[in-house]
Length: 307
Ligand SMILES: [Zn+2]
Image (cartoon, rainbow, N blue to C red):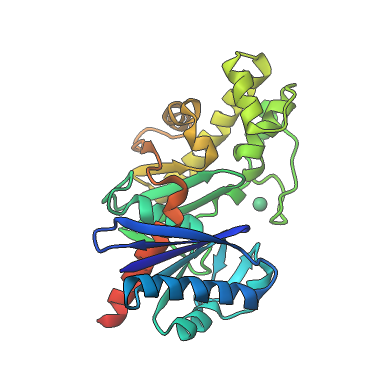
C-alpha cells in the first residue's frame, strides 16, 4: 500500500493507493501551520490510522508547498512551524520507514505523467499550476527535475519581459518572493484579475474577470489577450529551456476553456522555427495530484532503498 500526504496551508490530506494506483480512501485534518510539533503529531496520527486500515506499514511520500534542499531540509515554505527542522530525518525516524519529501508542484507533474495522468508515460513534461500563485515543476527523462538547490521549475518567479511591460504599459509589481516584476503577479488567478483592472475593469477576482469576458466586456477581452500573451511568452521560455513534449496546466485557471484552448496559439507566437510546439493539456487529477504524486515518490524511494 502507498500513502501520499499533501500538506497545505490550511489542511493536510492523506490518501491510500493500491499497487495499481487506485485511490482507496482519503481524509483531511486542519494544518497546525505555526506549530511544528503539533504538525508532526497530526502527521503521526494520520499515518498511524492509515497503517491501522492497511494492516501494516505502507510506503510514504509527503508533498509540501516549499523548497526542500538536498539534505531534506525545508528551506522556504508558508509553514513557519516546520522551518529549521531536518524534516526527512525526523519523519523517517518517527515513522520507521523511508519518507519521500517533495515540493507539491513537482508532485503534480509526477502524478500527471504517472498511470492514468493527462501525460501518462511522457518522459519530458512541464507542469504549470495557475491558481493563487504560478507554481511549476518538470519531469525530464522520466524523472522529476529538482536541480541543485531543489527549486528547479519556479517559472512564476521569472521576470516579465521589458517588451511585455512596454507593450501593455504594465506596472512592475513587487512579489512576495522579494523580487520585482515576477510573472506570478500577472498570470496567476489574482494576476488576471489585476490585468482586468489594469485595462479598466471593475472586479477583484478571476471569476469576475471571466464573467465579464463571457459578457464580452472590452476590458475583460483586453485582459484575456494580454494574459494569454504573457503566458505564451513565459511558457515559451520554459519550452526553450526544457523542450517538454507536453505542458500540463493545473490550478483554478486551467478549468477555463478560454485559457487552455488558446494557449497553444499564444505559445507558438513566442517560439521560433525549428522548435516543436508542445501539446498543452489540462491536468487530469487536478487538486488530487498532490497526494498521488507524493505517494508515487514514496513508492519510488522505498523501491530504491530496497535495492
Ligand atoms: Zn517572485
